[in-house]
Structures are given as structure tokens and as C-alpha cells.
Length: 362
Ligand SMILES: CCCCCCCCCCCCC/C=C/C(=O)SCCNC(=O)CCNC(=O)[C@H](O)C(C)(C)COP(=O)(O)OP(=O)(O)OC[C@H]1O[C@@H](n2cnc3c(N)ncnc32)[C@H](O)[C@@H]1OP(=O)(O)O
Image (cartoon, rainbow, N blue to C red):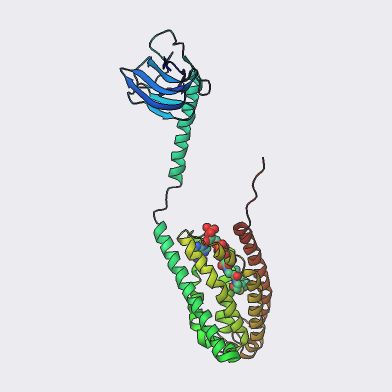
């Protein structure tokens, strides 16, 4: 069978900067697409209006173009993009006034001059928006130092609380029940260190280093430190109570999960299981923790009454008296109020972290 050379159907459209040419040929092979002397030369074998054949055409452009066309051969067509040398709107595509018979407008891409200008403006606006968004979210130059500091803080706390937990657990296995009454002497110093250090948990959100809730952090740090430094620390009789074991054990269990979670967040990593534990384990631990702390407070009241420590007794120049045990009784109420505030805070955090977000249905 003799092969004929035919012209394919060619469609075109333009923008201010470029010209789009679409050649209706499928299964294209042996294509030769180039620009010579401002003329697009196309030849290829393919399946067009006249079946499988060799097709070719030439288009001399109205104005100067970049001699390197970009083209993409797909299964169904060939798309050619030609850059205009000067960004200008053309009255027509070809130099010859009479439109070639095989050429037609590509209505899928066709825009008139004003629409094309609008498109250009929109693109420009989008580009400017992107630049301004990028400059707004410019990276904090101190982010590495901040993350390094937080990582180290969390690491030290993790090691401290893990040491306390492991020490208490080993002692429980080795000494049995006896270890319950000796907790403070065994791990009290490390607990002092960790809880003094934990004051940074109030300072960090104040400095904007973390997004923690300030009030829950204050409630937790002050709440724990009153128990540790005042209720247990100042009353020797309190230091060998089993309730101290419960308080220290519950505090250290929660922190052995919370601090590694923070450490991972400092290096932009997440372990799903750790996230789940961090935002779930407080559900049993927090109430038990506060109950154990409340037991300590109740047990300490007679000792404070007996010793008069922190109480204001008569006679004194102001002629006022105040029993510290009243403060402790009021503090018991505050503790459950604090528990309620932090429980609600943690419940919201848990919902935010663990519950899948609902998708908007259109
Ligand atoms: C005027 C004050 C009066 C005080 C009166 C006191 C009475 C109150 C008595 C109450 C007694 C409570 C004593 C406490 C007892 C116990 O602890 S019992 C044991 C069980 N305890 C718990 O389960 C509580 C553990 N604590 C916490 O969970 C938290 O510390 C918190 C207090 C609830 C605060 O959480 P918060 O920081 O707001 O939320 P997070 O989701 O953890 O963090 C928010 C984002 O910030 C990032 N972040 C926070 N800290 C760090 C950090 N150190 N390092 C790095 N990043 C950190 C965190 O990653 C989150 O970021 P995003 O993931 O990007 O959101």
C-alpha cells in the first residue's frame, strides 16, 4: 500500500507569552518537531483523520518565537508550546493572512485578550501571595537552639523520673512492703531535683517556647511542689508514709511517657503508640495521683497542728493567729478544683490528638 503525506487537524490558542499548538494524531511515531526560520515544521507517522499515515504541516508564525519548542507526545495527541520572543497579543497565528485549512482554534484553551490578561493578573497575584506567605512563615533563626534546649530539658527529666521509677520498682521487688515506707529517703533528692527543674514548665510557655496551657502547667507544678516541699519535705513524720510511695510512683509513671513524647516532638517525629499512651494514661493516673496527694495532706494536718510549723501563733505584734492546718484544708478543696481544670484540659488535648477529624461534606 502506498503511503500518502497528509496534514493532520491542528488546533491553536495563545497567551501573552506563548502559543499552544495541538496536533490531533494518535499513536505517534517517528515525530520530527522543530522551528526553523520562525516556522514550525511538523512531521510524524500516526493515526489521524485519514487513518495510519505520514502527516506533516508547516506554520510560519506571525511574530518572532523561541526556536526551541516544548512538546509532549501523548497516546491521543501532540501538544506543542512555543514561547513568543516578545510578550504580545497576536491578531492571528500565521504570517500569511489566509488561515490554513487544517488549522482551527483550540476552544479548550481559547481565551480572548482580556480574559488572558485577567489570567495573567491572577497568576501574578497568586505568585505575590505565595511570596508573602513564605516571608510571613519565615523560619525562626533560633529554632535549632530552642529545640536543642527543649530536647535536653525533656531528656534530663525523662532520665530523672525513669531513675526514680526503676529504683522504686527494684526496691519493691527486693525489700517488699518495707520499701513503701522508705521511698523519700531513697529517691527524695532526685525528686527534688526534677520538681525544681519542672518550674521551667511554667517559664517555657511564658517565653513562647512551647504551646502548653499556662494555667494547667502552673496548677501542676505548684500543686506538686506544695506536696513535695511543704507537706512531705518539712515533716519528717510524713517521709515514711506509704502514701509518699503512691505519689512518687504515679508521678514518675506519667512522666516516663510524657517526656519521651516531647523529645520526639522536638525532632519532628511521632510514635503513634507513644502519643496514644501520653494522651490516655492520665485518665486513671491523674485521679489516683490527686487522691494519693490528698491522703498525704490529710495525714500531715495533725503533724502541722502538733509542731505549729508555718502557723502564726499569739502573742505577736499584729495580734493575729492562723493555723497552717486551715490552709491545708482549703488546699484540699483547691486540689480537686485543680484536678477538674487539668482533667478538662487533658480531655480536650486527647480529643484534638487522637480523635480523627470529621471531613466537611459538600
Ligand atoms: C495559682 C495556682 C494555684 C495552684 C493551686 C494548686 C492546686 C492544684 C492541685 C492539683 C494537683 C495536681 C498535681 C499533679 C498531680 C499529678 O501529676 S498526678 C500524676 C498524673 N499526672 C498527669 O497525668 C499530668 C501530667 N501532666 C501533663 O499532662 C501536662 O503537663 C499538663 C499539665 C496537662 C499540660 O499539658 P500541655 O503542655 O498544655 O499539653 P501538651 O499537649 O503536653 O503540650 C502542648 C504542646 O506543647 C508542646 N510541649 C509542651 N511541653 C513541651 C516540652 N517540655 N518540650 C517540647 N514540647 C513541649 C507539645 O509537644 C505540644 O505541642 P504540639 O504537639 O505541637 O501541640
